[in-house]
Image (spheres, rainbow, N blue to C red):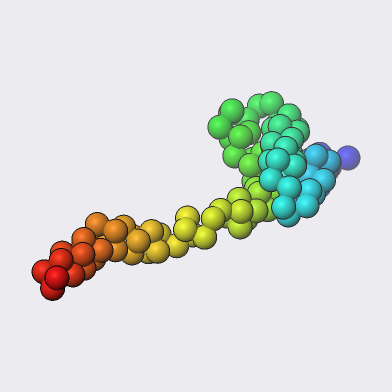
Length: 115
C-alpha cells in the first residue's frame, strides 16, 4: 500500500460526509413553523454530533450550521412569510404614525379655525 492510500480514503470519506444531509432534515410543510423549527434544530443537533471530535467547538458548530443551511433557509423564509404586512413594510407604519401625530391634528386645528 502506498502512503497516499489512507489520505485518499480519508479525503473520500470527508467528501461523502460533506455531501450527506442528516436524517432529521425531513421537510415540514411551508406553513408549519413549529415543524420547520424542530426539523432545523434536530438537523443541527444531529450534524453537530457527527462532526469530528478533534475540531474546536466553534468549528463543529459552524460545520453543523453549514450542513443544515437548507432547513434554516426554509424556516427563515416561512417566518418572514408569516409576518404581518406592517412588519414587512416599515414605511407604512411610519406613514400611519406621521398621519396620527402630525397631519390629523393639523387638519383638525385648521377645521376648527374655519368654524
